[in-house]
Amino acid sequence: MQSLCHHLLCLLLVFGSLQIHQLTEACSCALSHPQDAYCNSDIVIRAKVVGKKLLKDGPFGTMRYTVKQMKMYKGFNKVQHIQHIYTDASESLCGVKFDINKYQYLITGRVFDGKVYTGLCNFNQPWDRLSLAQKKGINHRYQLGCNCRIKPCHYLPCFVTSKNECLWTDMLSHFGYPGYQSRHYACIQQKEGYCSWYRGMAGRDKTTINVTDP
Image (cartoon, helix red, strand yellow):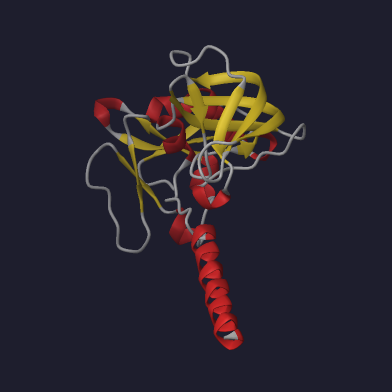
């Protein structure tokens, strides 16, 4: 009897460890250029996270972060001023963790029932870690390309198939993300609906535009 109980206990431990492993592996996000993250978000703000509270709803709960909003870049028609950001408390469910009173963050998210939700699949970064081109993109450039399509290239050959596409090759040239195009380029719509990569030059707000660059 004792041996049988021991055997059952071992099976329960193995099953439990498998379940935990599956939960930790549950969050999976497709790679996204920051411009796509901007265009697909309801809300884009720069804010400092000043507090947090675990709300007891659902199996793992929801984390409510209190933020001090510094600037809103997108979402004026959704929410006038944001005081709280909501995310799943579990990282396995794509919940995002913010440091308290440490950084100003760029936060992107969606609005449901008047509340702003974000997660690991959204573009959330400390503001100081963004490149100058990304900051300019968030300020005004990305919105100029929301009618464009950034087409990921994961392996060669790959081509644009319509005039509103920009070919995103970071996954090839940098073997991962983020890469040079993510940090320094925006896909902007030009005349007659054509889209091309747009690069801001350091030191001066001038640009080089070329449909094949980068």
